[in-house]
Image (cartoon, rainbow over all chains, first blue to last red; front, side):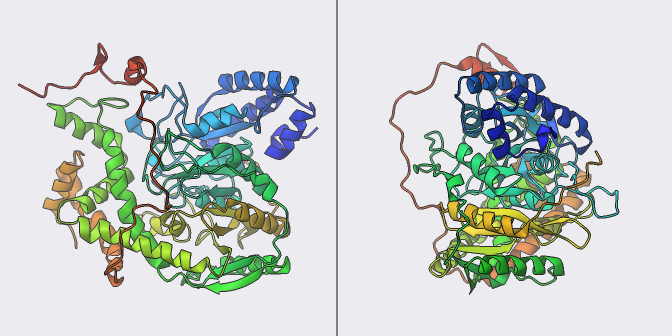
Length: 489
Length: 95
């Protein structure tokens, strides 16, 4: 038999139910794969003993014919999710030693469905970054390399560990979070599938907060079906998060019918930005043609405020971050650096505990919320957010889903982008979706001229993840993306 | 709008982050580069536009006003850098 780590979640699920192999065998293969791939730095904390214990419990349930939707499936968990008794530090120095006494709603849902945890995944510190170069635990390496080159590439961010681990097949799927593109951009850079659900679909309880009005958790997986299986388990109704909606979770897998006849697909013209690489432009066109060939109607739409989404985001997100991160003061958890008095202790703790990018964003956020600047910055940005959402609301009368590129480029090299604003521009196609609270999915659809994965993004109506999955599944079938990074690690 | 070095020091104080004197000029430059880019928003006429308060229009959920979890001081203190008898310990704040 070929390696069990080659199986998708859907295939492993069948194999486990048919008793072709056990959850323990599957988990052991993954533990070995994780150990072999340490050079990628995707995991910051491995939990092999816990994984084997969970797998054993899964095997007992499977033997009785029981078992949840993810019974015995080994997953990686982003370090942003609280995991009971296990390293949870948002990959920041300031949360040194933090072990929650509870699980996040998302991890609890996954464990209740039988998932096995392999460990905690690397990420940009507090989910602030687009290249996984801001983690206290060092850079994550992308398993992909340019054709004929041995040079390292970034996996994107902030869910860089999740994306790298899924692409390298060292976990079957991974949890991730997306505040401005942190699921979709790393998925795009690694040839994996990532969905950011509608704001409110997945509980944020127990997920370390970055920007509370934008943060949303979702999966990164190998294909569209696996993403649908994982989101079905992660999403729930949750009284512990007042922004989590009281809507039943649909059967996302059932949405993969392959039938998109009559679907109206919008092509937002503002996404055709200056300097877009030719292979991304070509990918976008071919994606539209695939959908048309399957009976969809392609409609030109306009979202006039698109270019203002990113600068407005860099007011809203830092403002919310500066409030959320005020809790890290060396008193209740994590790092404490002693000082002359309490203020000195706060200031020294935060100076040593936060990395440069996090400090920069806290300071921008503090400034835009400070007396005299609140209206000029924060209120203005929230007004622009209203206009961005209105652009989408207007377009939904003409289209059911929108198709765009996921990122303005393929993966780049570590250290290649040092200017913060240039780095922020990575999220130019993804951030509008967070600002309007919509669902978006990124999926690989082709390779760049130098052999790196390129992705398309589909944007949906609020709570219409099913149309995203259905449409993405059709593109996946027709694009026939089967490329894999060569296992050099 | 842009920030000068005095403002950078003031923001750092408000954010409770110790910034050494020699780090101030670099921070000034970085913050101004971001603020300059954000200036683009002034092109947009937002007169009469309501600022967004929620992306999903839903009624605020309200829980029943009952105690549903409690009596877990050990859990709450478990990660404290310094504690005694279920109190967080901090440097002296009152004389």
